[in-house]
Structure formats: structure tokens, C-alpha cells
Length: 399
Image 1 (cartoon, rainbow, N blue to C red):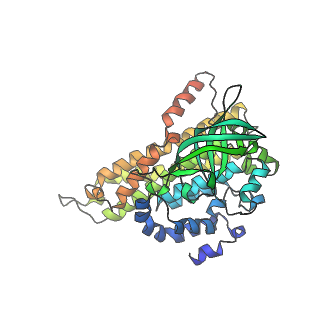
Image 2: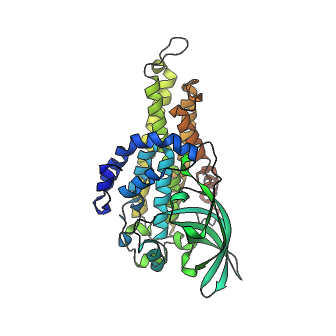
Image 3: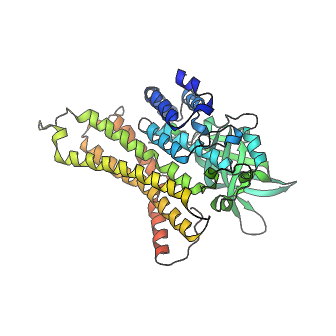
């Protein structure tokens, strides 16, 4: 572990600049571990140890339970910086960092379970409602189910799992908290991109949990989780889905920046088969300039949307919901745009990216995988938002 990471073990000293400096200091080591992470389909324990020591997982963790409680932009800018080197590492940091925010909405007794004896505990999650909860009496539920795509789960102490509570009325959707020893990890993450995320499956069978380890999604939508009784800062008044969409999309900004840096390094002096300098090709110049402009725009819009989220009015009013819709579409369009730019770069790079060790190929595959995430299917949200612009009334809890 580096001296810088050791110093940051006292997370009270961490601030946005210090966190970004720690990420910059790790770049070479992250790059060196990529091949092994890809082979093993998970981040190395050394990488996770460095992230823990640097306080990366504590950015959105409540200060009342040993966290940093910083602005979400701190986490997303860190995600972008890490993704310039390794999108898988960035993806895991942000997913597990956001899980701490989600846990902060749960009952204070649950937060005490997570962090009371171990302020360094980290969480993974699987959002899709793969679980079924039934009342088991004595203020407990029984949970069974199977989930996919839980990034970083190999390194988690706790997991948040999407589930439906079944009773007399309609099912109630929400998230439930389980300890690591209550689940089985299903090692099914053998994919073409984002291999290092270790986004394996999870299985649980007849696990008993107290009622307060379930949080309805409506509570996160209306910003009324019981955890707000102790976590009173403005951070936890932000709607979780907005942060989720940003967390899933922002790695693509860094990934595209890293891919273009690799392209520029490889092609500054390279010539084509026709002895023409690649850097002098007007088409290549236009492709790179357009990417550079869009990368700046993506960052600026992200900052503007996050700032506006703080300044908007009462939860659930018309202006707030309209702002949430725009912010979600701004976020979910990014991975598609980044992948289209990546395809243009890949074509301009010729045959070189066909080789497995070429970083351009690595970034391309990661950007493809990010584009395929369910949260990044912006067309679905665009159709819904467009219908509402025409006056249709639609219930949308993913805001």
C-alpha cells in the first residue's frame, strides 16, 4: 500500500482534491493489475484495500457513522478520473460508494448494524427485484431469490437486494439488506467488457431478516427514509434514483477520455499504408475534436444538474419532477454517445485494436458493456418523458 493511502487511513483528512490526488497516484498500479483483474473477473484485493484506505467508499457514507458525507460530484468526478485508466475499478468504487448512500436511508438501527462496529464496512447491491419477501411473524420477513449483476460483491460485507413484499395487497417494491454470510455468490460474470467489476450473481434461500431491513422504493422517491432522522444533512435529501443514473453513466466519460488518450498516443507519429500521417487526416482531426468538445459538455451538464438538484423546491412538486426527468435523460444519454464516439475512434485506429493487449480495444469493450446496462437505455426514458411533454400523466418512480 502506498504512503499516500496510508495517510488517508484517517478519512477525516480526505477532501475532493486529496481523493483525486490519491486516485492519480494509483494509476500505474491499476493499469498493471488490469490483465489479472480481467482474467479473474474481479478487482484484486490489493486494489480494494487501497480504495478502502483512501476513503473512496466513504464519500457518501454518513459522517455520523464514520463517513465523509461529501457532495455526490466528488464521487462522480473520482469515477471519471479512475475510468480514464480502468473503467472496472471506477464502476466498483461508484456502485459500492452509492450503496452507502442507500444504506443511510434505512432505520438508524440498521445503520448501526452495518457500521457500528466496523465504520469501514462496504456494501454491494443488485437493484432488480429478484427476491420475494413474505411475512414470517415476529416482525421478520423471509427472503428467497436470485439476482444478477452485483458489482464488487466478492469484496462486500453487506448487500442491498431488490425485492417485492408479498401480502394481502399489491406487492411492495423495495430493497432489503443482508449480511455477506446470508448469501451465496454465483460466479457467472464471464463477459467481454467491464470484466474486472466482478458483477456476479447472488442467491438467497429462506433468509430471515427484521422488518426494518427492508426499505420501500417509495421512501427513496419521496425522500422520507427513516434514516433521515439521524442523517439530517442536505446530501440525504437528494433522490437516490438520480444518483444511481449518474453513477452508472459517468464511468463512460472517463473511459472515452482514456480511449482517446490512448488513440492520440498511438497515432501522433503513425502513418497509414499510403504513407499519410494519421494525425494530419482531416476526418481523424474532426473525430477527436468532437469527442473533446462532448467530454467537456458531459462534465459541465453533470455539475449543473447536481447543483440544480440541491436548489430545487419541495420533493415531488412539478418543477422538481421536471428537473429530475431532464437530469435523468442527460445522464442516460451519455453512455450511448460515448460508445458511438468510441466506435469512430476504433475505426480510425485501423487493425491495431484487434490485438487483445491494445488499450483501445480494452476501452472499447468496457464502453460497450456500460452502454448495455439497463439503466443506460435512454430511449425508454425519452419516450416516457416525451409523452409527458404532450400532457400524458404517467407514474414514474425511477426519478
